[in-house]
Image (cartoon, rainbow, N blue to C red):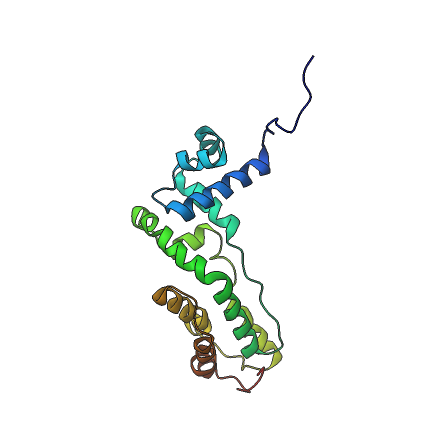
Length: 204
């Protein structure tokens, strides 16, 4: 007579449950050991599965890496406060609080990956599908134009995205979060004057 399932009977994982367990284990390996330690052997051992299971789903190590990062890298919701200045500050403060550590660690974890593959962080964004999305500050500026807060004139992509680029630069240069006064300075002293808002004090 066969035994029924007990608390000690292992559950066979399939489909999404198995893939989630693998990518969770892969994330832990990446955080602890960096890209050099991010091997099929290490991930399979951490996930309690076998290398063939990983190879069937992700034939190349880069495929597994992208799947792992995609699980943990989610877009930040855009604020809609009714004013461009406040939208920009809220978004940058959220990036600073939620993304500083990840951005820095990704640069450290993936330095060997970029050297090995000859690719850049921008290329990885493309693999993750992030490059196809409208960039956050483009949306914030478009909203400001619709509200009449900004004139409807052409603006370069570099100017529109400058706040995020400067905050990210400061994060990577200091290997830490950006002081709030620096965020305010970037928005008020650098960015808004370049955009030429019709009402510079709007949204304060």
